[in-house]
Length: 363
Image (tube, rainbow, N blue to C red; front, side):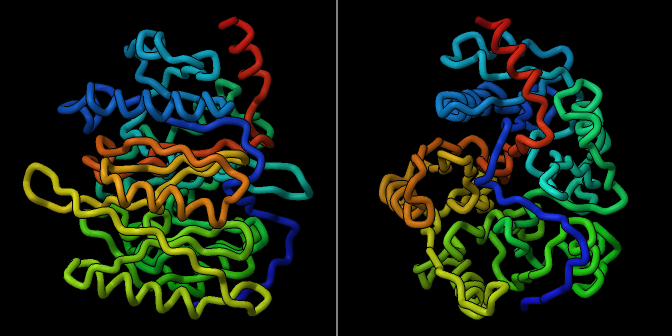
């Protein structure tokens, strides 16, 4: 389903691949769900930090007040690009409680939407204060901060092309445990008013086994430059996802952009099944990649053929980007992946002075 609304404001929801000041991450610690595999997941975080900082990006790394972040970072090759910020948080999936960028007349705002643990599934009281903390620490420019916490909206639940189109999933945004089960029509108005989007695409199909998020769009389909949608496909008729992802693909072929034109569709492979210690399938997906203005960081899962195909495929919509594979087998054990663990901080509201001061001190 596609819904056209009318934007009466100058608001613009910028795309992920546009100007970025930094990437927000949160270091797993012993009080999080990672406690039982802390060393393993921290090795994964080290890989992500190494890849992102070597590519030239800064990372704002949240860490527990009693955590030795400096010790964790000591052997990181570009540690001067990591800005540790002491902060309490419930979970490490910064994609869903980090600030969402919005532009108005070319000036950027950091929108702090409400987060309630993916529909009241998990505690989120500390996560909900993270953006306020970043503002108080001047990591986010205070004058650019906007409190929008009367509306629940997770960063992983929405995709935009930066030109007024937003793509999301019906299962997630109409969930009764998020915003009281609002209708699509009501949500269209809210998204238009808050983000300035005037062309909203509702994906009704696609659900991965083990997904706690009620089908976040960043596990299934992503908007990309060149009027493109990158999506998770399934070619194995015996796979439990086959029928659902086939329906999703069919719906994607019916989607039209704001000018009434069909999208170019680029299909990513589905990773071979990965299971937890109880035999439950985990929601591994290559669609959970992170894009910066120059790089695509692709989650990989130790599956040579699938990993290679995914990295080759993502070059189609991002031909000028360098593709960097990052082993995310540790992350998937807690039902998330690379995009979930990161959140871009738009250059317009990230305080460059903090980064410049920290880098100068490190040198």
